[in-house]
Image (cartoon, rainbow, N blue to C red; front, side, top):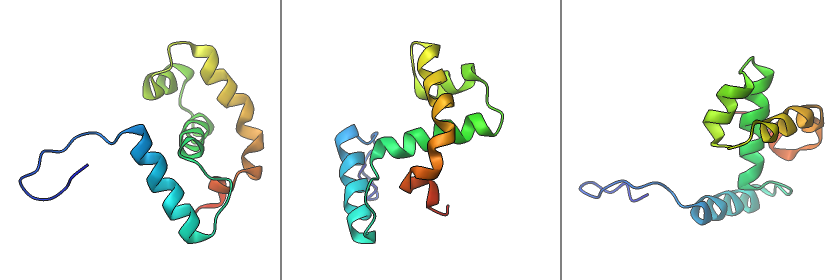
Length: 88
């Protein structure tokens, strides 16, 4: 989004987010990270910290709750993901 004064804000497009993530990952020398990695991290982190499936479903906009359940099953695989090691 254009943050210059006097310019209206607008949501980032999916392609823009991907380009930003790719650029900074390259600069940092990190491989295996995508914009989707951050989405997976946010969902699994929310579930690990007590969010309900319904809350996560609302947050992500998933139409089917079984999609959220797939993220929950993937929580044990976080140690293998590069994004898990980023200190926020």
